[in-house]
Length: 413
Image (tube, rainbow, N blue to C red; front, side, top):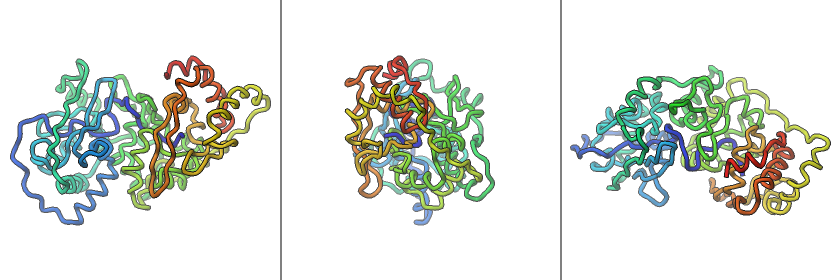
């Protein structure tokens, strides 16, 4: 069930949290000069590639590593993660380190201009040293002769040259901060979150042209089926998060506030669980700031709520208590606790309602830990029943108002 943050399940914005159209689509060039990278640089590049979450969009399940093919739907059409192996025809085998850096920093490849679905809007803050290390690592992986799949976009978004005008108007060198600090951990966390992890791409609202709104940094993105919630310090504290809990969540995928699900699951599984302890601490420090706000206590149930929530409680006992427990205590390796769950504590009920309608896939985590799949109830319960169940969960274990309506559920089906 719910977690601190979720990336998009299928529909994503013009600037999604992954790289697309990175290579291919041009005439074959001579292979780049042989690399002279040291084992230390390649090892560092492997670590940085994980920190930048490259595999999530460049490796399909059971496919060759970094050979592309991952599909992400957007309001503009479909993008596909491209081949970034050193294959000379379909990948980056003909690219120089300078050209690779230009793709990350400026969104320009040897063949064409990238769409900002590849988050060069965030990666442009990456240092040249780190770009070169990632390049060295990718040049060390096994070449995979897998053709790229062209983006399938609607008019006028299929006219790639228009992206240059988008860059002229909207591309910036830095991203605003949602927290404040000066410590070494805060500065390192800022780089991890803003440049490598590109958190803002999913967790910042978008403007009319798909640009991130600077004045609302990390205040939540709602362009996907499941939105990236507000992860500013105040919002995290309001949902009960501490720095220690965030480190556990990013390192293991499960904390007392819930587990990673939806698009946040691959972020943890492929990326943040591989960060070392210092970087996990730094990431949590940046998100909460050097002077983190105290986590808010869970609001008490008001007198008279029990009668109003009786219908929802009956639905919970009928369909949910078997996995989540009679008192919302959860069941190890099956379902997370609901008492104090982060998504139940979100003011916006969207992610909760969508999870109830669609269900959740099984979530494997580090070691032997996993959460079982949760079935969807869109075909079991009507809009009014889903609203009643959601209100029971939000009031009882989330401290929120019973403000989910049948019309609101209907809009999310």
